[in-house]
Image (cartoon, rainbow, N blue to C red; front, top):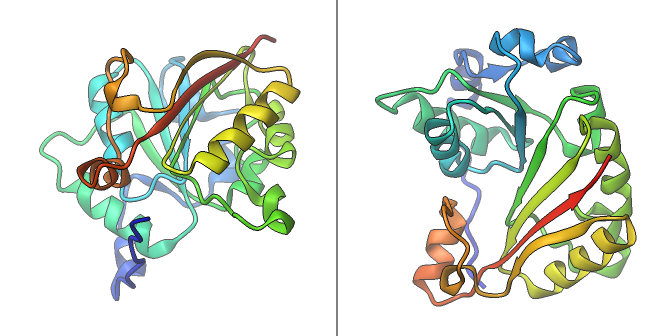
Length: 216
């Protein structure tokens, strides 16, 4: 497995505090995100947005969707903000939250239409299984933030996490629109890659993909 090391960014607080993309007081926008974006477009969130490649390209491609990236590590956030703000065309339909996903209900209430989980921490030890973003613990949290129909799209290189996620999603009433054990050799189209995904694919590592839905 490839390990991408987390490097400290010395001026990270300056970068974070100076960013117009980063929503510091996210609690005050609970139930009001569409007012912040000044439209009633659907809201898609990415939990664990990393360095921002995926959510930036999505926001540029789908301008009729509001995208919110969630990341808890300051250094990663700082790098993502630098990358996004250096873009020639900074999307107006993109915002970022610094937050641990376990607190997600503090930010949203029946407002989210889709969740992206890209290369989440697999937490391989059994005693840590409830920390996985597709555990029963997190799936119960997501129930509170989805607007009506629930949709989770997941990509991972970790087959154990993938199998676990399929099991937990099924147990919680989700059905699967698409599943692939080799995304880049499948018929799934319009795939926007993450930084991890590009590095994994370059080294011949297969990407697992699922799109899961649950009706209201």
